[in-house]
Length: 65
Ligand code: SF4
Image (cartoon, rainbow, N blue to C red; front, side):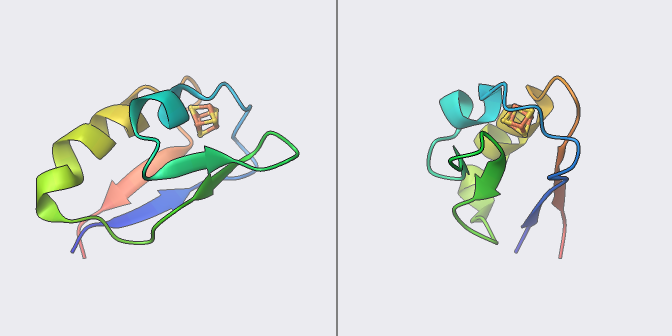
């Protein structure tokens, strides 16, 4: 199952990812992304991958496990 990763040091809190995939990404009280799930189902991959691509600082990746 594909695995979500986030570079917390790179995240600038733009929230593009949260808007595009609110079931996978959220922001903490400091405005830094956190993952709502570690793995995503195959059917959600295209949408969540698109959300990761929307990050202006490329902080999000999806690795095939
Ligand atoms: S889009 Fe990128 S910079 Fe913005 S909150 Fe998500 S991970 Fe952080």
